[in-house]
Length: 138
Image 1: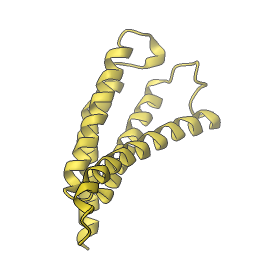
Image 2: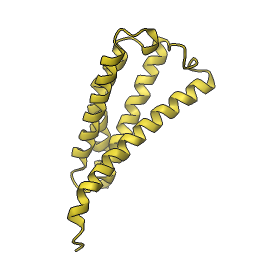
Image 3: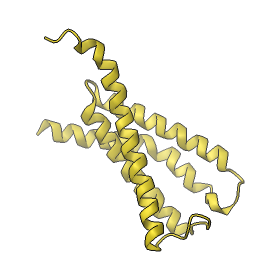
């Protein structure tokens, strides 16, 4: 047995959560960019419409689930715990975004948009970890 394994486990745990966060953020930002470049979303200096904010909420939720899947996949132990830590970080970041954007103007969207991100981060990462666990059992 490798004696350095127990010492490396915390670093592997941190890496699993960070990787899940990076996957979620990169996919979200990349999709935003692609939708703006394609003309489906307006330029960055113009606000989105309600339907566009709804689409963004949906794909960000899907990407949060994928991040939870990745965090669980790379977790050294307790994959669901890692995904829920990621979901907690996502909820906290979304809450900070909600607080910072409140009353800042239409470019930050309607109140339901950041609120939906706060409320879906944990269930989405849980779902991703659950899918990963089912796949692992096969």
